[in-house]
Image 1 (cartoon, rainbow, N blue to C red):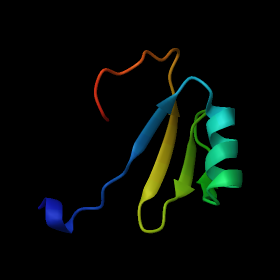
Image 2: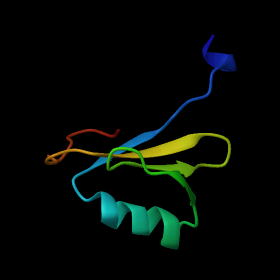
Image 3: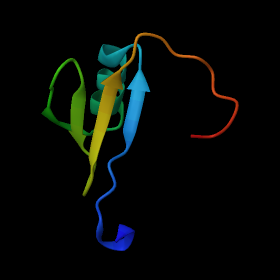
Image 4: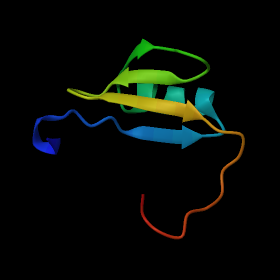
Length: 63
């Protein structure tokens, strides 16, 4: 099943507007939609969702 499924990466951030500028202006991704304070980019075959969270804590492992 997973081999035929599309993955959707999700980036959580407390600063959606900063992340939007980075993914759009620096990496060149195209904004598809902006639902509920989030941003969905065309990730070249998969949607990349930048999702808001109230606060972030440093992760002790890779994500």
